[in-house]
Length: 210
Figure (spheres, rainbow, N blue to C red):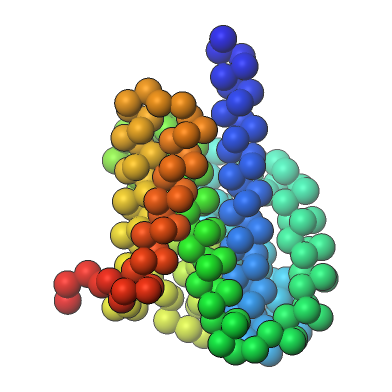
């Protein structure tokens, strides 16, 4: 049973990683186009947004090679998406662009946060460290994106809940894992919880106390 379970886990994490890369790359594309960057700038911002959090996670967990080096199809995917997205993004209206960034970023937050917590758990890290690794994976790419685009990082603004959504979603995954539910169910529920909580925070302007 151990081999099929390991295979299923590896496949699931691969799917989550790809989904997170696409979602965060999309938010990077849109942010870069809003700053009127050229194709090189769009690709650079998307690349750093998509891989920044996972790279820091791998360095902290001492995982070699880095996940995007091990899977060269990941940066190739971002490169191809950048080529296709650049002409399309020119036609987005500003209001639609802002909404698209929020949705893409929230989805990437959920995918990468839960994926990061899962990888840390697989590396036998303590449970609180697993949650923090999930948060780092989920938010660091967005921090780098905002810095490159000369914005105060979203996570550092006193705005709607962001890192809190990541942290809470990681704990949903970890608790479900402790309850021995299906790994697929735990991952999907935690991603949906993180995404939904973030969108509710935006919709109802939920903030931490000042």
